[in-house]
Image (cartoon, rainbow, N blue to C red):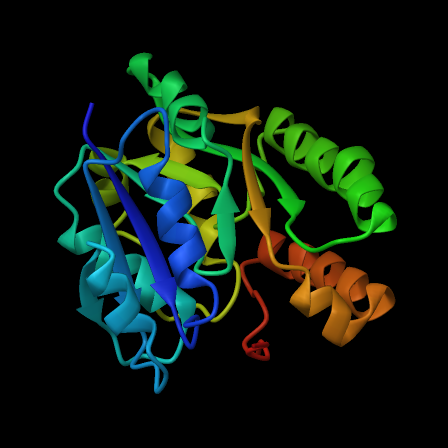
Amino acid sequence: MRVSVVIPTYNEGKRIAACIKSLKAQTLKPYEIIVADDESPDKTAAIAKKMGARVILVSKRRISAGRRAGAKAARGEIIACTDGDTVLDKNWLRELCAPFSDSRVVSAHGAVFLTDGNSIDAALCRFFLNPYFAATNALGLPSGAGSSMAVRLSALKKIGGFDETLVTGEDVDVQRRVRRFGRTVFIGDAVAYVSARRIRRWGYLRFFLFHLGNWLRILFGNPARAYERVR
């Protein structure tokens, strides 16, 4: 099984090296690492290229366009997605892609924790966020994070790929649309560690209210059209 890992980036010069390093240390080696860079003015693209990633340039000013462009350029059978501020557990890719041995599985998403969070953040991830991922998937409303997800390329092509018109919710949108062609699964052992920078910038209340509201908006096909870039 060939797995292409797609990383949309914008000004991730301080973090992209750690992300790629964690991918190179995976127990299941990625077939290729694709960095879809949104014309970052910093050294993101140069660092990624130096570390052996395949870099493509995007100029749409939204993460959905990066995921779409990266997936279109991919040569693997499975498209695994993560983000430039993310460090992956060494078994992340193996655990995330194991369900695809079942031809009925079209999408998988994993657990998310924080690289630089405190004990409150850790508890929220363990007892709220990841159980939420498991529960919504069980209810037929998969809501996994784009920092820890994978989709079968054949299913992604059937739905026309990631919707690059979306500013938010492009990850959830894909997971729900591909369900027409098979099963989605949540894998708690596929662990991604993302930056806590947005929580630090926004605070818990704003972060929670935004994502709760956006989950409801996504249900009705109208995800938020504005999302501050936090770097």
